[in-house]
Length: 570
Image 1 (cartoon, rainbow, N blue to C red):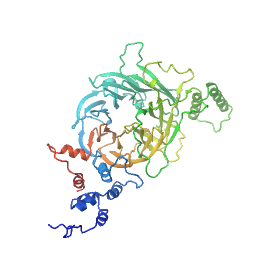
Image 2 (tube, rainbow, N blue to C red):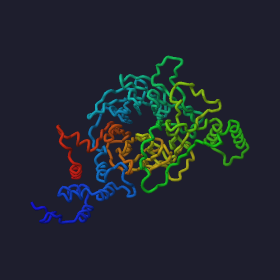
Image 3 (cartoon, rainbow, N blue to C red):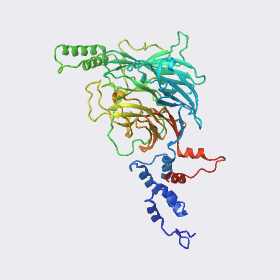
């Protein structure tokens, strides 16, 4: 038939500029379909300015956010966000018989582990079709359920954290280490409270917690370094060593410990602060000091406490203090002269210990950051903190981040530079009058981003996912971060995926109940796992990967992107 886009001499009937303006009014799939008509339309359909407009309009990205620095063109960037997000469900695993609480990948990406309310930890082979390798039942060890797992750096050992059977208000748990060669249990370590979870510090040593009550709302958290192999029979080799001892006020405790490796910070900076500036929603406090004014000496602290108690007895403190306020004030004064000041930063190759904490209420509303020095990364040396002075009861933190809300999840970027935090905010201006009655928390979950190199919040909070449980029933929702994406579970029966650069939600992943945990494959960010209270684990792959896997053998050239896009649209 006659080519309606050309005149009899073969020249275009419409100038490029007019075709361009017509294409501006089409959607992405229609532009790509129109590009098949003739060479002129094909050339216009790949115009960079056209795809820039399509990109900002389709993904609703703010116009002042620049293109990703690694992108080669607007068309390819559009295709990346559409074609490489793991949003196609490819497999559902139903081997668990109760809520699945956590997922973790091995560093090689060849295996992953899952923890569940059915009190098993299952280890899976991550092939094209996922298969179960091993299931360990922890009920013989008096566990109620398994809640968290982590592979060590060489993928030879698996740390598994669980909760003991006991009363509803019991906070005791345990950590066990499983060999991934023989699946034998190598060691067991007490962990209190259980939501410290635990983590690896080196390939053969792990961090656990313990809690000591001092008063009604005052306590002390001790973090221990444990040898993964506890059968060492030598009086010269320690299997456990105290790392830090930290005072807790107002019913708070240390929870959710993780380790960030500063030596991995040398990756290129991400353009995370693009777009309109927003007022920081979180405060970051640097507690280290290079000045001459160090912490009060024990003598001065005792004198301050004596004056404070005299003022109370003489009636000079008005209005009268409640028991809780009095206990907290006395504890603060006692600690002033008995806290070891922060160590100076000796190297940018150290590690940070990161955990949730608080100073106002039991609800975890702050992130504590403590430098781990090289000599602290082994169980060798003085036992039980014997190297500290007699007056130094507690260790101080190096940095504290206050998020003004209940923290329900944390995750590190692959380069360990950026910390992503799920929180449910308190009302603006909320004041905590009673540590046992924290402010109400929002249903919306905010996802904050902090740069651990600068200790600054660097991105407007992401928001799409929701949670509904109140403060006293609030539970952890695990998130994960890949090179380009961040994913999180939610209580609204969906997992969510955002782009880290553009700050936009790209996918909602459906389950039948609360989504507790998500995990990207460390070797292939186009594969994501989600775990849910519906007792299933779902595997999701990108459209591009699905097309490649479904292609017949011998494999012809993959279907072009525009035909996939058009078929999905229909």
